[in-house]
Length: 544
Ligand code: VG1
Ligand code: CO
Image 1: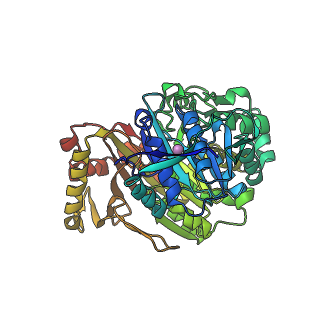
Image 2: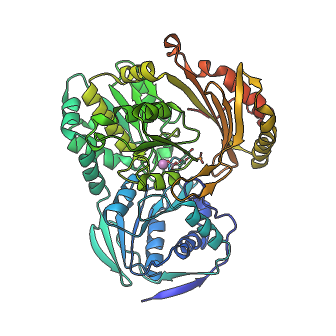
Image 3: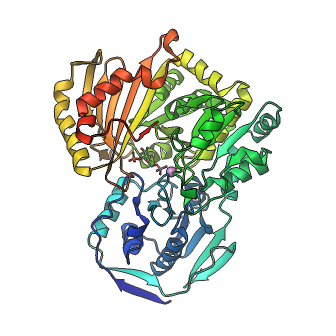
C-alpha cells in the first residue's frame, strides 16, 4: 500500500460550528487545510481499522476534489470499505439513510448547506456517526482539539478513482462502492408514506404542485420520487438541475431566497402546494396557495396529524424542538400526552432523544423537520408528509393551518437575521444584554411581564451532558419570548439572529399579519439589545 505521511502544521480556525466546519472555498483550497481537518476527524474516532465510511456531498464546487482526497486518506487510515454517492453526491438525509442502512461506521458529508457555492462561495465538511446523525459535541470538541496540534496526515499516493461508474473499485486495498445516490432514500420514503393515496391526490384534476430544488442536490431526488414514483408532471419540479454554483443562487428555502417559488405561490392561479429545499436537501419550506406555513407551525401540524401517516399511525413517543423554535409543538405534545423536549440549535442534539425513543418528530424554526426514520432533518420527507396529510384530509394547506390555530391557538413567530456584522460588535451586544438580563425579570416590557431571562443551558436527558451558552432568552408570563443568538454556520463576520414569538388564542385575532402582530416585541428587542444603534442597520438582512 502506497501510504505516505505528509508533514503539516495546524490551522487555528478549524472549530466545527452548528453543523460542521464551514469556510470559503478559497480557505479549503489552501494546501493541507482539508487534509488537516479530515485527519483530525479520523484521530477523534476509535477503531476505524476495517470499517466502512460513507462519503457524499451536495455537489457544490470542490465536492469532487474533496471526495477524492478523503477517499485516499480513508484508505491510508485503515478503512476497509467506502460507500460513495455517484459523482460524490448524496443529500444530507440520504447520507444519513445510507449510513444506517448499510451499518457503516460513519460518514463524511461535504456541504455548506444553504450557503452560496462556487469558487468564491462556501464549502463545508462534517462527520456523522453510526446512528446516521451529526457527531455529538464530545466528538466535535475532540476533532477541534486535534486540529490544534496536528503535525502530519496519512494519504495514499494513488490516482483518482472514477466517481462516475456505479459499481465496485479498489483503492490501495480499500474497496469502494459507487452507488446511485437516490434509490436507497427513495425506497425508505415508500416505506413511510401512503404512496398510493399521494398518487391519487397528484392525479386529481384540481391538484398541482411546485417543488423548487434551487439548482441544488434535491433535483434528482424530487424527480425520482415526485415524478417517477408518484406521477407528478415534469413541470412540478423547478430548478431541478444541480449546479456546482447553485445557479449563483442562495439555496435557502425561505420567503426571501426562494423568490421564484414565492412569486408562483402568491401569483395568479397558484398551485395547491409549493415547497423548496436547501443546498444539501435537509431543509424544507411549505407553502399553500397564497399561504406560508412557518416551520414551527409545520412541526406542530405534522405532529397533530401524524396518526394519518402509515409510519406514525401507532403514535409518537415525543416531540423535540430547538429552543428558538416556537412553542406551537408543545401544545400538541400536551394534548397528545407525550414528552416535549427543548434542545439547543443544531440537529446533533436530537440524536440521543431519537435513539432512546424519547422523540419521534423533531424540528427547528430554520426550516428543518425530521423524524426517527433517519438522524438528520429531511426536506423531501417533510414535503411527502404534507402531501400525505393533504391526501387524507382533502383540504387546502391554508384550511389545515387555520383549523390548527382554532384548536391550539396561534404562536405568531418571526426571525430577523442581521448578517455579516462585525464580530466584535455582535459579541459586545450579546454580552451587554446578558449582563442586563437579571434586572429584566419582573419588569414590564411591551406591555407584558418578563418572567425569566437567561442564557439557555441544556442537559441532555439521556447522557446528562451539558451544553451552556445556547442563546439569550427573555420570556414573558403570557408565553411570549424574545431570543437572541449568534449563528454558528456563517463564514463572514457574525450573523445575529433575533427570534420573536407571541401566543394568541383569541379567535378574532388569529389572522393578523405576522410582523404587525409582533411589532411591540420587535421594537422591544431592538431597544433592549440596541441593535440599530450598535450595528447601524435599520432593518434585518432577512426576515423569516
Ligand atoms: C442554522 C440554523 C440551525 C440549523 C443549522 C444547520 O444554524 O439556525 O437551526 O440546524 O443552521 O442547518 P445557525 O447556527 O447558523 O443558526 V443546515 O440546513 O445549514 O445544515
Ligand atoms: Co441544510
